[in-house]
Image (cartoon, rainbow, N blue to C red; front, side):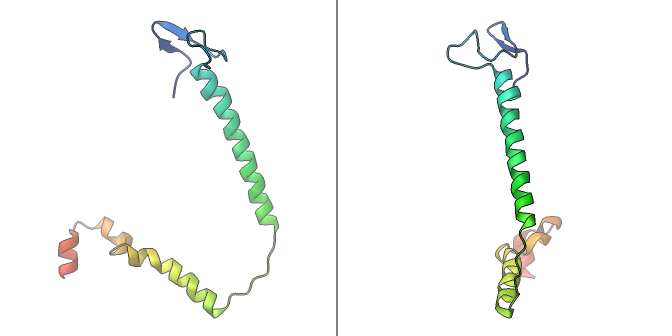
Length: 101
């Protein structure tokens, strides 16, 4: 990220929207301070609205035995795909020695 005192060949650019050093360009401070912040605030507001909208909808669903088994399979799948699951990351045993025993 740029700071408000970006040096470009000895010249300083400030918060002004249009760069005096480069044609058809905005200053880095204006891009990151004003434009990026505005976009992030809009994204936050839209995501909060969508979250509220999703929470306000109520759907009555029944969990059948087949859907419960599919859900359990999806929960177990990462532990089957990754050899040993997340438990190998905390041990000092190399994978070759772990699978020999």
